[in-house]
Length: 374
Ligand SMILES: [Zn+2]
Image (cartoon, rainbow, N blue to C red):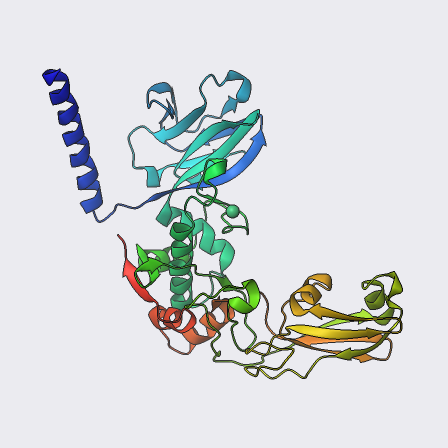
């Protein structure tokens, strides 16, 4: 008994030693599980360096696979519940796996789920960000804007880690979480990630939800006006550039009326106050976005929220004016996206005017501070 305890204690000691050494290393980083595919029966894979396939539950090696050779993982040949594909000798961050046609950073886990397979990327966080940034912001944006985006994307990933726990991974690779498309190669993006390594945004020492959008159009939006609830760090702030080039969406009065049901009749008039950025009204939020508009038809009057109008007529944002002109409804608006948190176009313009990424982030995320986690 004593001997057993001693052996266990030794193993624990050795393991603690390893973990300790790793956390101390300046190159340590978290690994995030990103869902890539679900409901597949088999997948074709390739690895960039020699790998081992392990039984995820027990850690024992099932097979070794050479670099550069395609192989298939099929549900019908998998006799364990989950496998992991990990590099045999090199660090995880240096491995690349090809799944079908796409290459990803790090290793892979393949899990049986509801009679099919889920494919999950075991991605070192800093490498994962390279695949996210390339999708979320143009690599040609100024470096300080890219750095702000890197911190936002890193914070989001860590804050939402485990959001898809029920599916067997941390976050998905679509707009539901963050778009991640695997291996990319942009010097500007790599530099932005490197220069902010391990940095996240916190509010009262807690990781924040770093919501962001394409372009606020002049002023960002309070989160409660979009999603309800109050998030103290997601409050409306003004932009360096207000009201750039407007977007215009034209809908014929006939098409417009037909979207309000059969007994609406013909559109007669529209009740909506004129937009002024940063000015609230009964029908507008404090940033000037449409809360609701009154659509008067020949048979009935409908009150519709700005969000519903945006959805119904595929408008870029809810910061708009709307009028009936001849036989058409004309929407004229600014910006693109929900308007909460950082505006990417705003970050670009602030960076262009000489702001640092710290200053940009502090502007869009009220009362938050940067924290270096690793
Ligand atoms: Zn998701």
